[in-house]
Amino acid sequence: MTTTLYDSTAAAAAASVIRAYSTSFGLATRLFGPRVRGHIRNVYALVRIADEVVDGAAEAAGVDAAEQRRVLDDLEVETFAAMGRGFSSNLVVHAFALTARECGISRRHVEPFFASMRTDLDRTEHDDASHDDYVYGSAEVVGLMCLQVFVNAGAAAPAEPDPDLVTGARRLGAAFQDINFLRDHADDAGRLGRDYLRVGDETRRRDVLDRIDADLAVAAATIPRLPADCRTAVATAHGLFASLADRLRRAEDPDTRVRVPNPVKAGIALRAAVSHRSPRPPRTLRRPSA
Image (cartoon, rainbow, N blue to C red; front, side, top):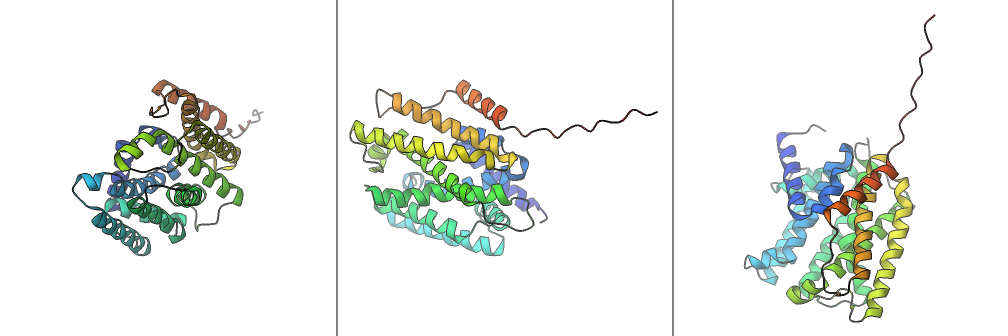
């Protein structure tokens, strides 16, 4: 596929969204190989924009809940249309559509995501079943979109990923989401009136952290099976969130929003690079000339 000026401008717009919204994720994306790096940014840019519709930016602009739903619905319609025709006048949607078409991201990945985003407009408390449904749509399918990129970027035709990698992607996405729920619990409850985990007591909080640790362990076991140009970035993201989970477990105040200091982030990235670097091909020894 020929890259046009419009395509590259759309990719730059997606990259700017990630740089503005997440230093940790920005660090991880820089560690992907060039084959996948731009595609991952395209996926997360659309996810971030949709999330902003329901998480405060639209409301701050004076958009009421009913209109937020219409904005979200319009974004979903435009996304599907762009996936079909390969073009959108919305630069972030255009970038995502190019990635979706190349890497085999389909409606079965995108529809659950938008369904979860709509849930935030009319549901403030979750039981175990609704939590699981929400996490699947808001996080696990995002992991599956990324896996489609890992496996298919640059391929002649997209293929279905290995089932074990599918499990790892889902479990990693679920762990990331639950860690974010714990980190943002005070803000979600106070500003948005939402409760995703019902962590009203220490026992419940510990159970959630135990589930997160189990999800991270399953995901870690699949990282060595990812394509070589993806392993360091995924291992870095895994390490950053594992560190957050550990800090959440040790936090004296559960409402404190824990973070990973920059020097620790750098150390995690370095360890991931050393552990998951691609083996160098053997050198060809030349026979001395006679």
